[in-house]
Image 1 (cartoon, rainbow, N blue to C red):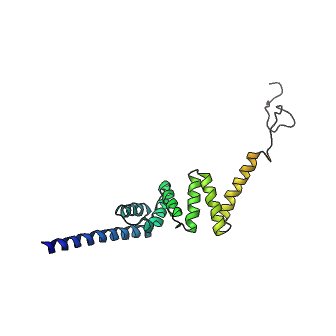
Image 2 (tube, rainbow, N blue to C red):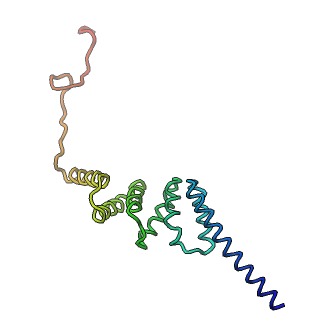
Image 3 (spheres, rainbow, N blue to C red):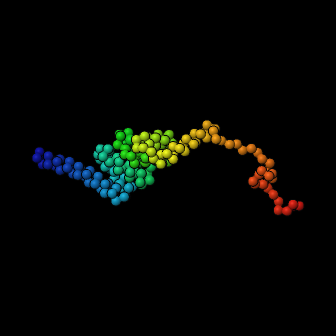
Length: 167
Protein backbone atom coordinates (compact mmCIF):
# COMPACT_ATOMS: atom_id res chain seq x y z
CA UNK A 1 0.00 0.00 0.00
CA UNK A 2 2.72 2.44 0.95
CA UNK A 3 4.76 1.61 -2.12
CA UNK A 4 1.84 2.07 -4.51
CA UNK A 5 0.92 5.36 -2.82
CA UNK A 6 4.45 6.79 -3.23
CA UNK A 7 4.54 5.69 -6.88
CA UNK A 8 1.20 7.42 -7.43
CA UNK A 9 2.41 10.62 -5.78
CA UNK A 10 5.62 10.63 -7.83
CA UNK A 11 3.69 10.13 -11.08
CA UNK A 12 1.21 12.84 -10.10
CA UNK A 13 3.95 15.38 -9.32
CA UNK A 14 5.87 14.60 -12.50
CA UNK A 15 2.69 14.99 -14.54
CA UNK A 16 2.04 18.42 -13.01
CA UNK A 17 5.54 19.65 -13.74
CA UNK A 18 5.37 18.26 -17.27
CA UNK A 19 2.06 20.04 -17.91
CA UNK A 20 3.61 23.36 -16.78
CA UNK A 21 6.57 22.86 -19.09
CA UNK A 22 4.23 21.79 -21.89
CA UNK A 23 2.05 24.85 -21.47
CA UNK A 24 5.14 27.09 -21.44
CA UNK A 25 6.35 25.43 -24.64
CA UNK A 26 2.93 25.95 -26.19
CA UNK A 27 3.01 29.65 -25.24
CA UNK A 28 6.53 30.03 -26.64
CA UNK A 29 5.44 28.33 -29.87
CA UNK A 30 2.46 30.68 -30.20
CA UNK A 31 4.76 33.64 -29.56
CA UNK A 32 7.25 32.50 -32.20
CA UNK A 33 4.38 32.01 -34.69
CA UNK A 34 3.24 35.63 -34.06
CA UNK A 35 -0.04 34.52 -32.48
CA UNK A 36 0.30 37.11 -29.75
CA UNK A 37 -3.24 37.02 -28.33
CA UNK A 38 -3.08 33.24 -27.85
CA UNK A 39 0.45 33.50 -26.48
CA UNK A 40 -0.64 36.09 -23.90
CA UNK A 41 -3.47 33.92 -22.66
CA UNK A 42 -1.16 30.89 -22.55
CA UNK A 43 1.43 32.86 -20.56
CA UNK A 44 -1.31 33.94 -18.14
CA UNK A 45 -2.22 30.28 -17.75
CA UNK A 46 1.43 29.44 -17.08
CA UNK A 47 1.54 32.17 -14.43
CA UNK A 48 -1.61 30.79 -12.83
CA UNK A 49 0.26 27.50 -12.40
CA UNK A 50 2.82 29.20 -10.12
CA UNK A 51 5.68 29.67 -12.55
CA UNK A 52 8.09 32.49 -11.74
CA UNK A 53 6.77 35.60 -13.46
CA UNK A 54 10.27 36.88 -14.24
CA UNK A 55 10.77 34.06 -16.74
CA UNK A 56 7.78 35.01 -18.89
CA UNK A 57 7.40 38.74 -18.13
CA UNK A 58 9.22 39.99 -21.21
CA UNK A 59 7.30 37.77 -23.63
CA UNK A 60 3.95 38.43 -22.03
CA UNK A 61 4.57 42.19 -22.20
CA UNK A 62 5.45 41.92 -25.90
CA UNK A 63 2.43 39.68 -26.51
CA UNK A 64 0.06 42.16 -24.97
CA UNK A 65 1.77 45.03 -26.76
CA UNK A 66 1.59 43.41 -30.20
CA UNK A 67 -1.98 42.22 -29.74
CA UNK A 68 -3.18 45.74 -28.90
CA UNK A 69 -3.96 45.18 -25.23
CA UNK A 70 -2.12 48.28 -24.09
CA UNK A 71 -3.21 48.42 -20.44
CA UNK A 72 -1.90 44.91 -19.74
CA UNK A 73 1.27 45.67 -21.71
CA UNK A 74 1.93 48.76 -19.58
CA UNK A 75 1.43 46.71 -16.41
CA UNK A 76 4.01 44.14 -17.51
CA UNK A 77 6.46 46.74 -18.82
CA UNK A 78 6.21 48.50 -15.44
CA UNK A 79 6.87 45.19 -13.70
CA UNK A 80 9.98 44.73 -15.84
CA UNK A 81 11.07 48.30 -15.14
CA UNK A 82 10.60 47.87 -11.39
CA UNK A 83 12.75 44.74 -11.45
CA UNK A 84 15.44 46.29 -13.70
CA UNK A 85 14.79 43.78 -16.46
CA UNK A 86 13.60 46.26 -19.08
CA UNK A 87 15.61 46.27 -22.30
CA UNK A 88 16.40 49.28 -24.46
CA UNK A 89 13.42 48.61 -26.72
CA UNK A 90 11.26 48.01 -23.66
CA UNK A 91 12.02 51.45 -22.23
CA UNK A 92 11.05 53.07 -25.53
CA UNK A 93 7.89 50.95 -25.85
CA UNK A 94 6.85 51.79 -22.29
CA UNK A 95 7.47 55.51 -22.88
CA UNK A 96 5.41 55.50 -26.07
CA UNK A 97 2.61 53.47 -24.50
CA UNK A 98 2.48 55.85 -21.54
CA UNK A 99 2.20 58.74 -23.99
CA UNK A 100 -0.55 56.92 -25.89
CA UNK A 101 -2.42 56.39 -22.61
CA UNK A 102 -2.09 60.18 -22.03
CA UNK A 103 0.25 59.82 -19.06
CA UNK A 104 2.60 62.53 -20.24
CA UNK A 105 4.79 63.07 -17.15
CA UNK A 106 5.63 59.35 -16.94
CA UNK A 107 6.32 59.28 -20.67
CA UNK A 108 8.58 62.33 -20.51
CA UNK A 109 10.50 60.84 -17.59
CA UNK A 110 11.03 57.58 -19.47
CA UNK A 111 12.12 59.39 -22.63
CA UNK A 112 14.66 61.40 -20.64
CA UNK A 113 15.82 58.18 -19.00
CA UNK A 114 16.20 56.58 -22.42
CA UNK A 115 18.25 59.52 -23.68
CA UNK A 116 20.46 59.42 -20.59
CA UNK A 117 21.07 55.66 -20.77
CA UNK A 118 21.32 55.02 -24.49
CA UNK A 119 22.23 58.36 -26.04
CA UNK A 120 20.37 60.66 -28.36
CA UNK A 121 17.36 59.39 -30.21
CA UNK A 122 15.29 61.14 -32.89
CA UNK A 123 11.99 60.08 -31.34
CA UNK A 124 13.01 61.30 -27.88
CA UNK A 125 14.36 64.57 -29.23
CA UNK A 126 11.19 65.27 -31.24
CA UNK A 127 8.83 64.58 -28.36
CA UNK A 128 10.89 66.41 -25.75
CA UNK A 129 11.40 69.42 -28.04
CA UNK A 130 7.63 69.63 -28.50
CA UNK A 131 7.33 69.65 -24.74
CA UNK A 132 9.76 72.58 -24.54
CA UNK A 133 7.84 74.45 -27.25
CA UNK A 134 4.59 74.02 -25.32
CA UNK A 135 6.29 75.25 -22.15
CA UNK A 136 7.43 78.39 -24.04
CA UNK A 137 3.89 79.01 -25.21
CA UNK A 138 2.55 78.55 -21.69
CA UNK A 139 5.01 81.12 -20.33
CA UNK A 140 3.73 83.65 -22.83
CA UNK A 141 6.81 84.15 -24.94
CA UNK A 142 6.50 84.26 -28.70
CA UNK A 143 2.74 84.70 -28.53
CA UNK A 144 0.77 87.03 -30.73
CA UNK A 145 -2.57 88.72 -30.29
CA UNK A 146 -5.37 89.27 -32.73
CA UNK A 147 -6.97 92.65 -32.84
CA UNK A 148 -10.42 93.39 -34.13
CA UNK A 149 -10.39 94.64 -37.69
CA UNK A 150 -13.15 96.34 -39.56
CA UNK A 151 -14.85 94.32 -42.23
CA UNK A 152 -14.29 95.28 -45.86
CA UNK A 153 -11.08 97.22 -45.32
CA UNK A 154 -7.88 97.03 -47.29
CA UNK A 155 -6.36 95.12 -44.36
CA UNK A 156 -8.90 92.31 -44.27
CA UNK A 157 -8.31 89.15 -46.20
CA UNK A 158 -11.88 87.94 -46.00
CA UNK A 159 -14.78 90.27 -46.39
CA UNK A 160 -18.40 90.24 -47.19
CA UNK A 161 -19.28 91.68 -50.54
CA UNK A 162 -22.07 91.91 -53.02
CA UNK A 163 -22.16 90.74 -56.59
CA UNK A 164 -23.53 93.99 -57.92
CA UNK A 165 -23.23 97.45 -56.40
CA UNK A 166 -26.93 98.25 -56.36
CA UNK A 167 -28.06 95.00 -54.78
